[in-house]
Amino acid sequence: MNLETQFRIKNDPMLQRYLRENSYWYKNLNRNPKSIEYMIKQMKETYKLTTTDKINNLSDKLDLIKTFMNVLK
Image (cartoon, rainbow, N blue to C red):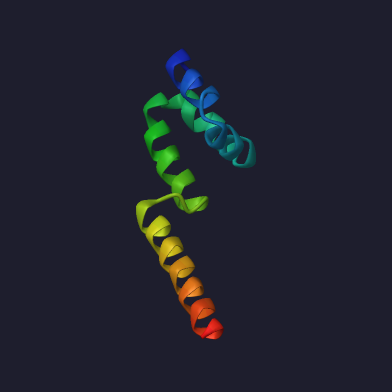
């Protein structure tokens, strides 16, 4: 694994966690350091960090608040 890839992983705790949980990425990154972009994409999908996941999460929270407000009426 090249140094740039190692620094990127070390500076992002979520990437470190994902790499520890999915150790097969060590082999992939050693063979092809450019695959870190794909690994980041997979990590975001796994941990639900994508933009659509965030929007859905916000929508769910707003629905919960709305329901709570309706109960208080």
